[in-house]
Length: 193
Length: 294
Image (cartoon, rainbow over all chains, first blue to last red; front, side, top):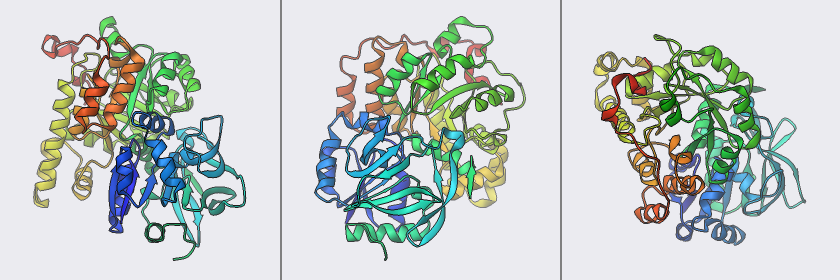
């Protein structure tokens, strides 16, 4: 199988490294045609406004939206999660596919960026939150909370989508990598593996 | 448990800017144009480098008012410049919550020996480098991001190309040497040994490296990306050109699609006048900003 990484801007090489570590073939996705060649997609961190602007050059988001709705296994981190959110406080929505309300730069500016302990499924590890968004609430019961940082929701899943607000690709711990492999192989969210 | 501003988090912001374009702006209006055109961050300045060069005199940190105006206008990260070695300007920038500090040769240096100890700050720093030694010294001082030191305000990419090629060649020298030669290379490049050891282990610089200085066209941006830069700073090139919004957008698309000449041709069409450039040969040694920094 081949996993695409949305590569308009942002930490796409870091996600590629994660896929290399679990021996999954990857493709840096920049055009609508690229989307026909992949069996899964990762939306990386970066700047959501910049990515959306760049995507408008070749209408990439339109096809991406269709593919996600057709069930393409989709992982998003940080800005990628803003791109998929159904509701963005004080901001534009992009390709709304996950029923959450999100707030951009919710913890403050860069000086308030931090590392913190995240509970992801049955595991605890320390991850980076960089000018991170916050999932304010889930909009219905189809959305399952899968990661928390104290009382904050930092990871959710819905059908074929998993959305996180932090950066597992900057840590690449074994638990995350094993989960990522299982998720991409299964094609949908897995709670145990 | 929550720890703010670790080096991983500082370097992480630079990682998120990769593949993007950072644009110089002098007010809120320009900042909004930059954000809408797809900039990943803006550099808030009172005057762009081309004007600093033309005006002469001592160039200092921009007024806090201008920087805050830009910070209020956009949701993308905002950077600002402090003079080389001027750690108090950096303290001021940090206190107003700037997202990134550029310890920049575009401003008049405040210290002729020392750079700022960047490890003392919560805010991440970007610093210019003409070669691997300079890059390594800045990384040892705590820089979370490196950029080339092309001649700002000239619209001439030759110096940025030279710096990028030099850094790449020198990294290759580190990667191909055997470990017995590392101390000699450290001496040759005036590069701290521990940074060279990191480079040898990682196969590349431990932080992101952007192109900066003299980039004026989509083709310039793509050239720097093909040479291996992680992203691009555009200073005077955008708001000194005929149609800033269109040029900004074209450079953004070119930076993502740097390997696709068809896209580059398409975005380069009907762009209007680029900024007027300056030949580096016509600058005296004193006028070359890249000489600043130690």
